[in-house]
Length: 123
Image (tube, rainbow, N blue to C red):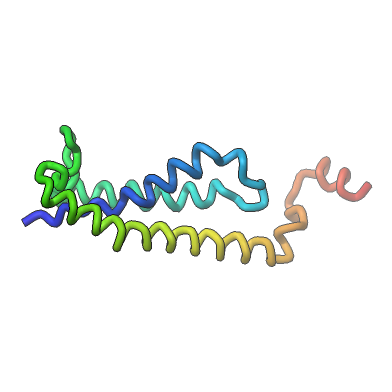
């Protein structure tokens, strides 16, 4: 029996929103990091679900959408598994940003920076 999971839909939806509105986030938030985490997890989960037969290359693409009773179960799994996964990705991203901001080397130019950059910073 196929589980009809589509938990990757919640992180994928979050990824679409953060990608579309990426220019509205401050640069210091490194929104590209979040998009990379989301894209990576969505691709891996998509491959996993395709391998298990839950995601197919023909409409309706999710096997759970072929039967209305399975669709209700799928939505419940998106809510109970997919949303917590998306929250976990955001938490990991937030931790990455906080650690990056607190590292002393984050504000300083790298020691191996080209001479032109070092001269500009010394002026």
